[in-house]
Length: 341
Ligand code: ZN
Image 1 (cartoon, rainbow, N blue to C red):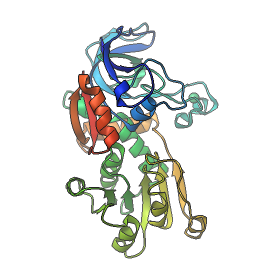
Image 2 (cartoon, rainbow, N blue to C red):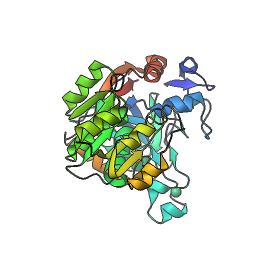
Image 3 (cartoon, helix red, strand yellow):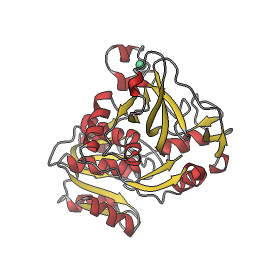
Image 4 (spheres, protein in one colour):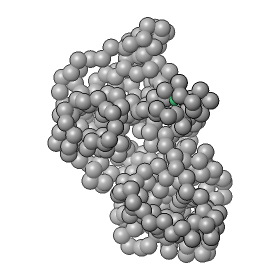
């Protein structure tokens, strides 16, 4: 089969499309013929070389939709031909947290496409229970946009930050796939949404999605603007993924008792925390990553019903995988970049 693969860590130039052996469905697995696979920032971190155990050479790709083409031992052969989207979360099932039914806190949490070979290829073998059926009405490209971004944003806002209808939410970096998902989920939850982005085009796109206040970070200080537009109260929830460049402003933008929820640090891990601000305003700083099975199913149901329509930036053939890496790295995208084998 053809796969976008790299044999060493580095820039986008290490990504090549090559012929590799087609995987087989092992016991408890299904083989998925990939019809669409979306990119995440995670793919860039893995390509650059994180301090994690990954396969090398490595095929990236954690967001996969396709058709079951074969099943391994112990899997219902009736699944062949089924349209599916893959949940890439690989809980160990054996650690203390998994045994307590606390899977999102799994001590050996791994991700398909990060710790294992992923879906930037014509085929990928996955655990049968990770392949969720999707209806004919949902396109492969839309389905592939869902797993990492939409489940992360769903858990971040609804479970971890406990967002309620009528609250004010500020979403940073709102041109990336997960931040856009956060904008959409916050709107669905009945929140008033404030978004920070760059460029007139992105401002217009976020307004079209329904965001109530959109700030262009190149023209104004977002925390001052959020204060102005909440009558100097601040927002109830900030969704952070930018990290070092925005952390201080994100904390300043919060109302008393506000919650900052973070799932990423694209601009770097250091961020200045004004500690008196945290205790005086009784702020909460909350981390989150991926989601539970129930959260994945809830967000998939919201997409399947049409309540949320995933935002796709570009669809490219797998042959242009290197270019897809370059586009995501440049940060000019709005929504998900999807590769089609
Ligand atoms: Zn575990």
